[in-house]
Image (cartoon, rainbow, N blue to C red; front, top):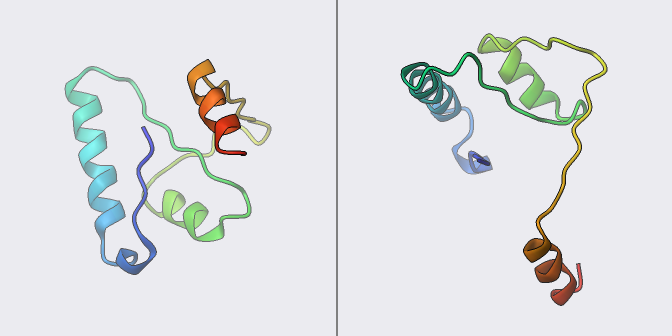
Length: 80
């Protein structure tokens, strides 16, 4: 799931509230952890996740994405 707070709404506590809500939901469902992804160059996001208790466990983590065939067809059709 992708969740984004619009730039105009940032710095109003919305991101913190969303994160707290996701943590409560995940705990209620028995999940042992949740994780977020961002770019190292996204300094505001890095500061936010650090401030809200996020732990950067491994320096060398890399994310690979595999798109579904339907998404690939849509992207090709749109010239992306």
